[in-house]
Length: 372
Image 1 (tube, one colour):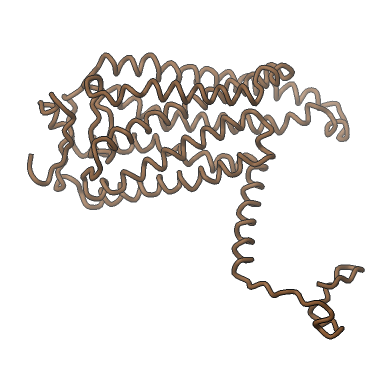
Image 2 (image 1 turned 60 degrees about the vertical axis):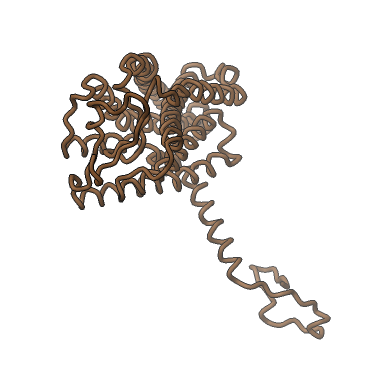
């Protein structure tokens, strides 16, 4: 390999004909493409971190935590935040085309990315099931899905995913190496096709299929519930509509629609990356590496990270309460910054003022006069 090409040795048996699959030369990368790739990575990472920090702050406020499904949304935002932090490690490689960190950190970043992406899908599945239970069983859902049970479900999802992905640290099962097409460390699934197919066919595809079916079922149930609500309110007065229980379901309908939009974003962002992984598992080393394949793999891989910051825009646009809390939080931060910049004058008593009250110390509010 020449001086301008970079690769990380994945262990024994790595230096075979597949090694040429990951070689990348600086001369093969156009300057414009490399610059665009670096900018895209910086934007995705920064928006994911900033947006999901706002998500967590707003969702953990007292007003939102009264609803059990918000715990799933908070866990989803936390996993998206971790994705944004992990993506920061791709900024330097996208500029220098080299992995400057250790092999252990290479495996660790790949492991964390695989875990949080899997947890994001599981959280979406839990949200769909929870919303379906709320619609279909409006009375029993408070017993079946209490806040304590929701927390237990989240802990179980995280623990099982962390334990299931620990196999990525063993080189005799999977090899983790730096991929200069996407500027991060990835798992070489084509090195162990049996385990790769087991991971895809037994874990990822079934979860996505269940997520698809639950989303479709949720949309159908939502449509029928909306029709029933419209029929019930058709012959009622305005006062009766506002006091009826069906009128209160209007806000829940918006949250269901918001969930469907989030699930759609999850499908659009993850399906291309999963399809590309299956193609690479099937083709293995026969995959031709040209500029088009580089651009395709880069686009599909980082499209999977796009959903990590898209949720904050969905929340702020479709949920008025979320937008109000977000606006209130930003206003509070601005007011606190202004208070720190303005010096506070110590109050003086009337004795210090010689019994006189200066004109600027009098504050008039309607019919009441107060002294500052």
